[in-house]
Image (cartoon, rainbow, N blue to C red; front, side):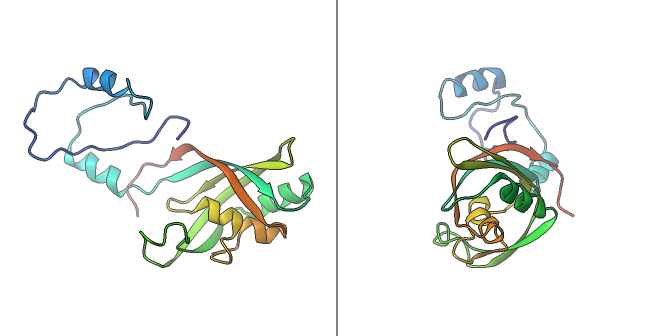
Length: 173
């Protein structure tokens, strides 16, 4: 997660210690390189519920490699075609051992593309919460329809994927 990070809620049931110095906790937690925390605060049950039920959109940056030759016009054209497009995504094979095998409809809000020097390209895209971005790009052998690969006519794979922003932290409608 890049950018401003992602919100989280930590609930502690029946704590033994109720007087916690959040500034000290933040300093100690940030001694590790695993994650970095900021702006820790106590909150009420309403905020906990709101955070747990939120369905924010997310902005991603993906480094993509195509299995064949593609040019800038092709890639940019396909990217522009994915504006407010719904994708049917069957549970990806890589997560089907821990998720129900369902078809989920997820919205791709927009996609932008930029060619890189090494035969790859970068996609920046905003998607509805729960979108499997790697599978949207690759098609996951027909489990994600439509897909970027299908529209481009060339098999593509995500080499690197970053979340760069999380938007609209509101309760679902």
